[in-house]
Amino acid sequence: MKVPENLIPWLVRVTGRNKVFLTQEAAKAHAEKVARQPRPFGPPARLRGVDVSMTVREGWPVYTVVPSGARPSGCVVFVHGGGWVNEIVRQHWKLIAQIAIESRTTVVVPIYPLIPVGTAATVVAETVDIALESRERYGDVRLAGDSAGGQISLSAAQVLRDSHGVTLSRTVLISPAADLTWSNPRIPGVQPDDPWLAVPGGHYLSSVWRGDLELTNPLVSPLFGDLAGLGPVVIFSGTRDILNPDASLLASNLKEAGVEVEYHEQPGGLHDYPLLPTASGERARRLITSALAAPPAD
Image (cartoon, rainbow, N blue to C red; front, side, top):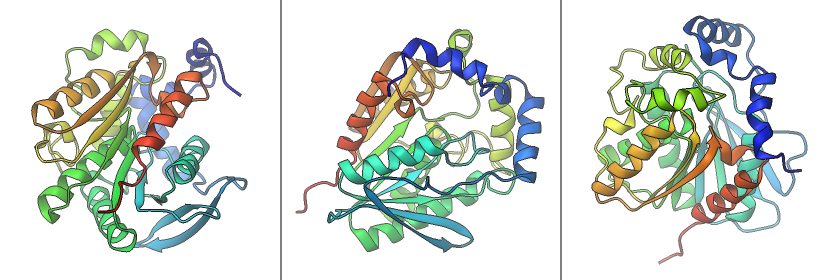
């Protein structure tokens, strides 16, 4: 069932999803609560059309999702969002299943440690190792992630290029957090129209996630990294998202660096709009599964 686009901002506010980000104090309290009472992360009991298995790697649960009754080609490592503080949710799992089925590929889903246990350096490094192992096992590997997971994915793509000589055939970023300094001068102009995210909470969560690294370190803010030599990148961003100014800048910088980039900007779209049960979300999901299909074998 599709939800009218104009109802989503109201639903976000009514359900209180924006409260975590409104103040640094609220973000801190939420992070402490989640650390005391971890949320469930497993897939829904009825995830149709796919087969799911799980292993544990270096203490991380890692799920493997494959289309039922089909021979998948290659692999997508999907890194979920949630502000580095929230677990993977049903909307992520539904998109993951859709990617597996429509892209006819294996999807590997790492459940990484959240703040304060997980920080940028350790989580990006482990994501890189998972991508390398997936590449050895399944062949071509692509990265995809939303929001915080988009940051992790783009940082990992840079490490894969620099430290392992691996150029990914595709990296798909959904409403990515590209610059955790929150210094883009366009952000204050977008903030009044964003019903979901807010800078104060984002500042707090970023300050914990960075660990001992500077906010401008590419493992934290991949917008500050070298973009040249990356494989093709596909970006989705809505204009009612305070991360949109940096997503737009990222697309421009990628193009200037000679990277093949496909930028989808949804007018009036909220943060993570491709995961929402709306008409624009449905269109975006079709584009995502198309982009993540394995390239033809040589």
